[in-house]
Amino acid sequence: MERRPLGGRGLSSPRPADLDGTLAALGVSVPIRHAVSSLVSGPPSAIQAAALGDAVGGRDLLAVAPTGSGKTLLFAVAVAHRLEGSPSVPGRPRALVV
Image (cartoon, rainbow, N blue to C red; front, side, top):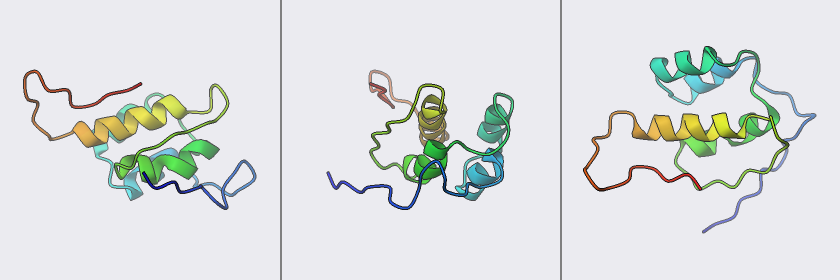
C-alpha cells in the first residue's frame, strides 16, 4: 500500500467555508449531505478537510486526530457514499469498519 502524507495541511491551514459545500464538491449525493447537515454545520474540521477527498475517493485511510474532531463522520460519509446505489449480495459484506 502506498503511503502518502497529508502535507501542507493542519490546524492552522485555511479550511473550506462549510462542510456541505465540501461534500458537494466531492460529488457526495444530496441525501447524504442533508443527513450530515442535520448533524453538524460550519466548516469541516482539520482532519475532515485533509482527508475527505481521499476517503470519498475510496482510498485506504488511517486518520489520527483528537477525540471529537470528526473522524467518525468522515468515515461514515465515505462508507455511505461508497454503498449508495450499489446492490447488496446476501452473505457478502459491503463495508468493514475496524
